[in-house]
Image (cartoon, rainbow, N blue to C red; front, side, top):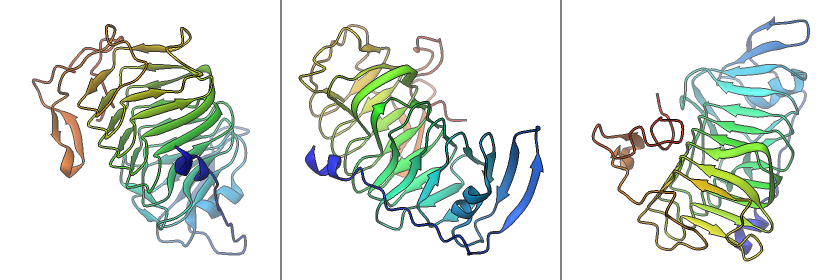
Length: 279
């Protein structure tokens, strides 16, 4: 989708002389530290990122961080409580850009043009909720990040959009991708990535859309996913997947956990529940 492709650009501005509220900084090894931040400081995460070095973790307390964040290479950004630390993109740009072997874990991302952009190798997006984007939830180019245990819902573009992705051991695994206004997952070019154990449901276009270049590619591993009530499907064989109602408890209240009797229970290739493993 041309509009989504054009939205890949990021507009991160760092102001190095602003004061950051750092609750604690301690060494966890000879080469790694943990930096704790609270939502009370202006541009708190971005300022902590200026201090961070390879191997460090930035741990964010509960609250709203109204900023665009660029995660340095080899740095982890982790929410202290899942979904309680919120990055709000203020209605523009990209909420988070991953810098190479960078990880974001446990955040809610909302109210930006794009949720997360990844164009470098060995990135990871885990246990996040990505919602309310003007375009795609996650955009990745060239290298497939590890995308695991995320809830990617109610975005105006696709849940995940990728171009020419090489997996390099990464996969799109155990995510709940639902109620997006374009595709659940759209892969363009010659992408080769594993798509496994996801719930892909109620998206307004295809659950999984592959470009003609990818076709029904033998290098694609698409297994043990639920595809349900997406408006269209393309280039997808369903015999190794499922087509039943996932039975979310309360999606309109952002509760995408599964009802006790859901058919998604224990159906994963690993014997676990399909979709994001929400604790």
